[in-house]
Length: 226
Image (cartoon, rainbow, N blue to C red; front, side, top):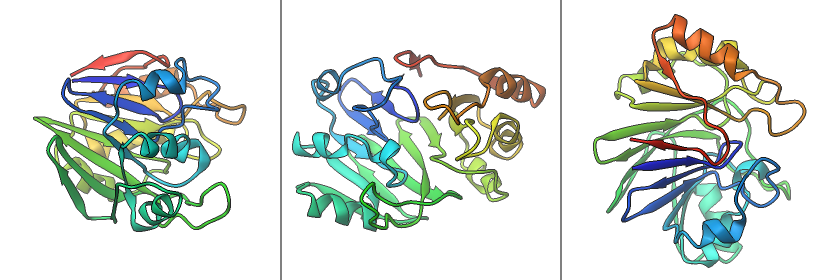
C-alpha cells in the first residue's frame, strides 16, 4: 500500500486495485505539489471526509462527478448528494462502513464542521481506515481527548495527527496523544499550510521519541509505504 501525503490533511491511499482519498483539499491548497487533474487521473474510487470545512471538503465534488463515492457524516453525504454526487454513503460516529477494499470507522473529534457556504456539516470526526492488515487513524481536526485511549485499543499501525496549532492542537499536545493512541508510527499533518499553522514537526518528533513512538515527517508529495 502506498500512502501519498498531498499537503495539509489530504492523503491518497493506493492499494494497487483501489484508491481512497481522505480530505481532498487539492485545488487551492498552496502546498499541494500535484494538480487536481493529476489526482483525478488516478481513478479515485472513494473520498472520505472527516468534516466539512473548506480545507478538507476541498475538491470533493470534482471526484464525485468523476464517479467516486463520497463517505462522511449523514450531513456531509446529504450535502454532497444535493450538489449532484451520485454515490454517497452517510454514517456517523461509532459506525463502520464496509467496502470491497476495507472499511472506514468514524471516531469522535473535538472541532467544528460547516461547509464554505455556512451549511452545517454535522459533527466533526476522525476515521480509522482498515485495509488488509493495516489500520490507519486520521484524526481530522481535533485536540487531545481522553477517549483516544479507546481508539488506540483498536491497534493502530499509523496515526496521522494535526499539529498546526491555532485551529487544532499544537505539536506538544499532539505528542501527548501518542500516550493514548500507541501507534506503531506517527505522521504529523495540518501544519505549515497557512500563516497561523505554526506547529513545528520537529517538536512533535521529539515528543514522540520521548514516548517511544516512531515518527515520519512527510513532505507534500512524499509517499509512505506500508
